[in-house]
Length: 297
Image (cartoon, rainbow, N blue to C red; front, side, top):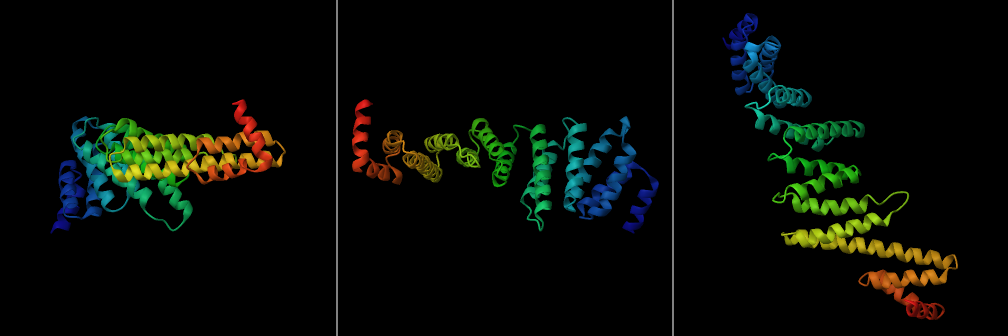
């Protein structure tokens, strides 16, 4: 009987009847049948001033039905049309939530093929970016930014990840994601300096970020992790300077090497490289130069 009524409703072409039935079918979990009616309502009501409210309802339930069927592209497209065409829609919060869930599902779902995985993640990031344009300071904004930042970090896009994590730190002081974001800011600065030409300025920036994170953290675990990052980054800096000193020795520039060894010893005293630098400065052939350099300073 219900199928007969549904067929009659479709044939009648009455948008109000179709909408009522589409919503009823959605609530019963018959999403495919709901979509057929709701899409017809959207088609019949498009561009008609007297059907404005009908179209708003139809777009929302099309998005919900598509999402239930895992048709993520259709769901996000309809939610975006709803938000774009109906400023102040009664479905605003639910449409934002739907975009969030679609975006997260796309960036989190494991894939069988790398190319497909990257494309799907790109789509998810684009959806979350649009969510933030519609609701930049809403209840999901900090969560959205953090998930985007983590995704960019995992893809090696450290500058983008750092900028997004920094937004959380600066704009959402009470967010549960603020402390993880502070750590991410520090990590991104250090990771971003790696590459064909290693630039230790990024490591110094990361070390400063880690110090600030440790100072600002309320959670002891965050403070402990930040201090661990700081120690790791300082070791990296000390190693870089130590290797520079060794290279100077190989080129015969003993005086400059002594200066760098002293820098490692004085600026990074808690690192293993400071101990190595002290032993190097105690070698007979370097000790005299080290003493002369100390007097000149």
